[in-house]
Length: 133
Figure 1 (cartoon, rainbow, N blue to C red):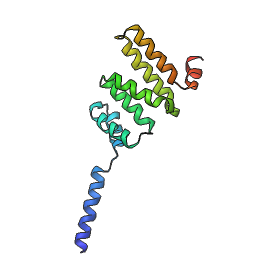
Figure 2 (cartoon, helix red, strand yellow):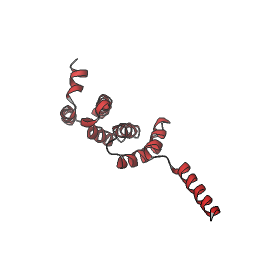
Figure 3 (cartoon, rainbow, N blue to C red):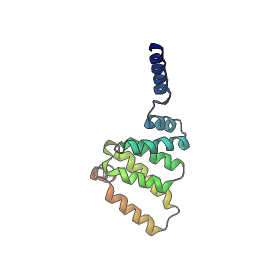
Figure 4 (cartoon, rainbow, N blue to C red):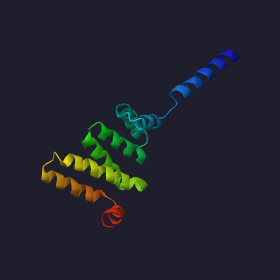
């Protein structure tokens, strides 16, 4: 009985050690190693697990940009911008960069429409602190 119990405990400990990292921590690790193709898998899973974590959105947006999935980057930044809290400036900056990158290939009407959408979803303190100052 005790040998079986010890084997089960060792198996459970090994399982936790080998697979215990959360999707966010694994995605963040790949993100920090500049490995976007690996990071995207874990960050997308982490977003499904923790949809209120603004940092996941920020990392995922950057990863999408690195993978030239700019429409997805724009969508993820726009989704979190109104509730990004202390990351609002980072999110708004990244969103503006992606939109301006896309502007090179966009028709002027589409570019202006995207800028207007961006202006509507930006919190007021971003406008006051960064653009109007």
